[in-house]
Image 1 (cartoon, rainbow, N blue to C red):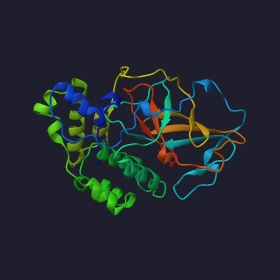
Image 2 (image 1 turned 60 degrees about the horizontal axis):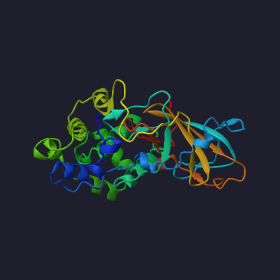
Image 3 (image 1 turned 30 degrees about the horizontal axis):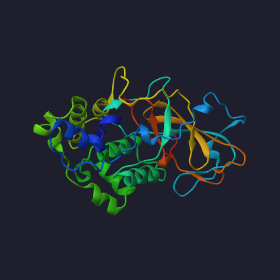
Image 4 (image 1 turned 135 degrees about the vertical axis):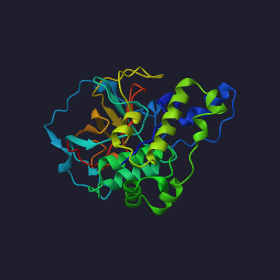
Length: 300
């Protein structure tokens, strides 16, 4: 069965661990290259002036548009909707909540090319289950060695990644951060996430671990707190994408999101590729999960 890996909450991500450890008076290993570092400050395109706006065109299925070799869509004027398979990129945090909005941000971080490649190539491999892809993404985020994963995930990695990417991801993990003198001197919110990552790495390589077991570690249950640095983002807020169109994200859960796109007549986005593998839906509440989007339609 499959297993999952945990990424670090928005204000306690690997990119910030050096500063946190410095304040704690300890020396950190080189962890500045976080696998996916996208966080709320990177979601700069939210457009509050469009709150409540409903495009003055009939809503169409995005799948009606011409598709690209990347599994994207060639944009034309109009109002479109697509119910896609989405993926948790922030394990160890809470899933989407009612009434809370999400903003566009691009994938950033040391593993962004591998993550984009997996999601992009998954469109051409519908036979690979969504759970297998999610497990593979969690493995990358938790810095597990791909060569130690179960057969299903290793086979998926071989199908979805290039040989160079596979070689780059087969590296050792950093379990010493989850326990010992370094961990003891880190803030509690950082320690809890690092321990979750270590648990998920261990589960990823333990035969018989079920998806449900991994999900319980990766997707926290109960009421989500308001995370540090959160901002008020109402559900359905549009982001003005730098390519010249508007997009918004309406998650049903971490596994699926309704993506809506508005391309006005004369917009710069006409003719551009709308590649969902380059979209991360970032929540206004940093205690909730970043959601990687994909060009694969969700089937309940």
